[in-house]
Amino acid sequence: MRYIFTFIFLLYGLSIMSQDIFVSAEPIPAYPGGEKALTKFIKDNLVYPEFAQIKGIEGQVIIQFNIAPNGDVVNIRINKSLESACDSAVIKMMKTMPRWIPVNKNKLSDEIILPVNFTLPTINSRKIYQLPFFPDGEQALYNFIQKNLKYPIIEYECFGDSCSLCPRGRVTIRFIVTKEGKIESPEIIRA
Image (cartoon, rainbow, N blue to C red):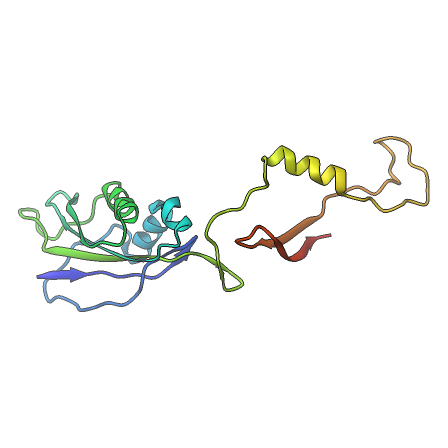
């Protein structure tokens, strides 16, 4: 008999679909802490491969495994492949999974199937493929800002760094970098 578990959450492009396919009349192994704890474990340990994100690869990996009499996750195998890096990420995560609560202390559990969906994250309904970076690195960005930022003209005289009259502070801005590298939708988050 097969047990199928599925859950839902979204985090940085990882999602696991939620719906119970069927319930067995026999008891099934339990993840310590239940479904919420399993969802948290997956959220914290499953890594969306950078290669897959850059290539825009999305889809589902279905993993099969058994629970040993001591609670270990064993016989991990791919039931449905997506892409080798995604498949490997799921297997790697499964190998770090803590022991389950077994049903039978004398034999392996029946097969457990866990579908895992890889979905690129979105901001304002736009997919994020890779974190952008400034050409020539962070220091070049600081140099660009220093050279091009025009401070407002102050109508009073300031005397060095310790002057309390001089306006000081940090402005935080959020923006989108398009695939072409253009800045769009700049928005002041903190004035």
